[in-house]
Length: 441
Ligand code: GAP
Image (cartoon, rainbow, N blue to C red):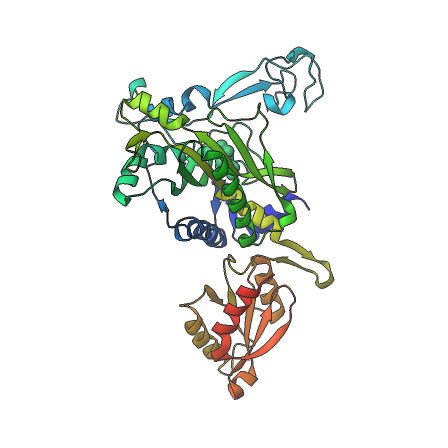
């Protein structure tokens, strides 16, 4: 299956649009349409619940996108958040150096073939390119007023962690979770919403005693992997992959990726990192403020170690969309087999015909269901076409009102994946739908 099929369905059904399309599009930025925003919200709410509701020692935070520029010096992003880039002088293609070699430092670039045009001897030496977007605070563009759009949400948590800990009277180990936008001036942005310049992260920073970090890392790897079962993606397409010593980010002692098998190969959706006390130590140094926590039992101060789980919401959504895409050749339809837990629309209410009082009954059913689920009403076109439209949108249930409804208060409940229809009483709808969400496989 190609990623183009997903792109096309996403546009057709209102999941995802290219940004600024009427102006020819804007590179590597996407807008989320009515179904896209519903799906994205459902995924992020599931993540939020699984972090902050299930774990009583994890609390939330929403810090600013713009922060003091010194934060990015302390974090290492001003110096170390660089991609070495290579250009081909022949065909003008641009590559990240690590796409062409595993050993950037020792590669003789004039002996390497261009991966696009195949010419040897035309590649430039690597040039460093910082991925942070710069802007200015205030009316005059002076160097001293430079601000950065955050490239990760994590730093907002580190600089607030003692305030949060004090306010919530948290005892170590504890976590702080945050969902928010991050920005990276990606040079090579590709694969639809996989790598974009504006994206959302769902990050949780877990503060532990030094020495308890390795065990915590093991626990969080397990815990995060389980989350993908809740999303309903095929477990065979999800795996953990450890970073080799050359792949580790500047802040990490140990790092694992949760990867999904996309049409373009196994790729990272989420990173789990042991950041040690690197960030807190650096903020202590750059701000001149103590970042240590006080252990009342031992009457001592120390810098906690941090285990980070950092997921990309957009990438997670792409894995969900890719996983759900099913060409039902036998029935000549495309179905998005989204788990009902995250489907943008849970049910469509369809009067079989537009007369004989059936639409009125449909509207009443809509009112009954609305407080419980995201439901829509559709009376346009043949019933078959209406069902197929909703199959592509990933709507798990179709509720049809026909003439029998007027006699015995029953409707048909159609199941998206099997197309099986069962006759049930209107007053049983909420219970039956809830049971089906629970039992969905
Ligand atoms: N705080 C750690 C951190 O930011 P990362 O591995 O650079 O670590 C974490 O990013 C996650 O953010 C990735 O696993 C990915 O899902 C998402 N992400 C990173 N860059 C992205 C981009 N350009 N477009 C979409 N998602 C991105």
